[in-house]
Length: 308
Image (cartoon, rainbow, N blue to C red; front, side, top):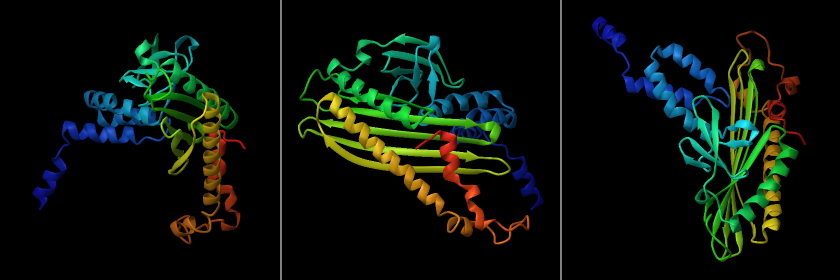
């Protein structure tokens, strides 16, 4: 038995096992915290080669899934890193400025920009719809998300030169409030796919919202809430479509935030009591009569800058 225990203790993880474990930690880092995780991983691994390979594979996936926003050089604008704007692994289109950002994923910076090629941009017909929707979404985001940014990409049928062809636009809204000095970070991500169906003259709208928050002062509490939506409206002019789509997005996101408020206001009477001991290890009773001081919804709104 002793020999078997010694053999188990001496078993060392393979190169690939170390790399996959390192990637898992990087990919599961909360919003804005991947660099802190990376720093600790370097020390734990004590293997520069393993870390570098894990980082090269994990950072691009993390950046796209979290839809991080990077500032382009010379104040040329901002670009949201996502699979919808990806041209190559290191090149991402900003359709608003018709520029392509070349990024360093591990450093999370935009190193340079270049003008987008004609084949990377939508036709003038599609651009009319895209730019009109972009303007309406920008207006909505500026009113509802002080820390928010948005973009609108064409992901299908971008070469259509007039009516008679289906096409699809994707709206991305992302907001982050990072406050590591206060042990709290939060993020809001929403993606809306709008399928313009020419034959039926209908716009099919599908959305997904993901809200994350991480509190790590003397503990580790993480919120990861997701919600999917489906709606539709009629095919109109570019400006009318933009207004209708923006109103639908505004309605669903506002309603979802309200639903979160209701759900978390009930936590003290339900979930918290089921999870927490009657008398904690500290021998101090939990203040059920004053649970508002632990309002998760209020803190999420504060950290994301979501005002009503």
